[in-house]
Length: 327
Image (cartoon, rainbow, N blue to C red; front, top):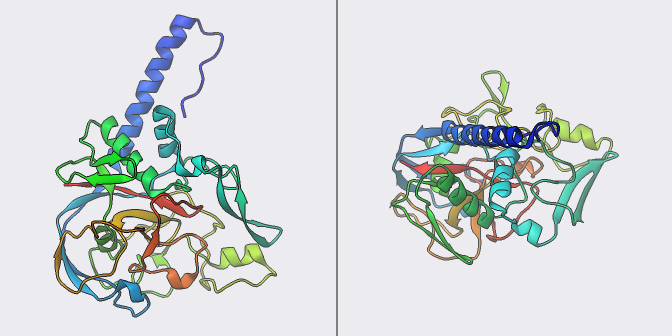
């Protein structure tokens, strides 16, 4: 982030330079946020589990989507840090005084409550390019509104305590619906089990395609036995990887299978078999949908139709988000 000015500078000169640097940095972040957005052309597809692996992702049903924008990357620590520093925002995790941290030390897994845990400390200090974690759905909603205001866009969300209303006339930043998310994960609704297709190895055009529980994870735990890992594949990371470290899918989107879960807009509920236009979930509920899978999650959860769910104010070391926009 912005470096402190040399203390030997004269106060007036230092103030002018500081303003200039901060203005330039703000412009850079705004350009990054906008340049990362990819237009996803809408269409129809059969949403839901066609593999027989995820019972709560059935029945398969027809959906129709308008075009929308989606960030190529999961939101990073650096982007979230800018939001916190400028707004003074305090996350749900920080309000709760910490969360559960996952680490591997001396070849043994540790999962413990750490009072220091937050988006800026996950058992270690993450770098700016790693996906932000320990953020709740509410935190993600607040980020979207802040980013929209910063980029002179109409905010999508009206927030009143725990109640959030989505103004669909707004063109600011927002979370993806789970229908949009799955459409992109399946490279436009194709019958792809994984973001890289249907191959047994997570590889696209000779490049590794996912940060998942694999041989790297197994070696870090050796000689202790762990639950099944993705055999014959090494992504090189034990924890989260910097966004964009692996090959993108056919739509140019990164990390659609692995790294961290991603909050979606929808309340979690059962699918209907009826066709739906631009579905956005139930009007009310207890838990919000999160899609994708974390870097150390069981490999049987990996899949483009896998659905996660959690309470809106919950958080974890593998919970992040990605932003989008309506066209």
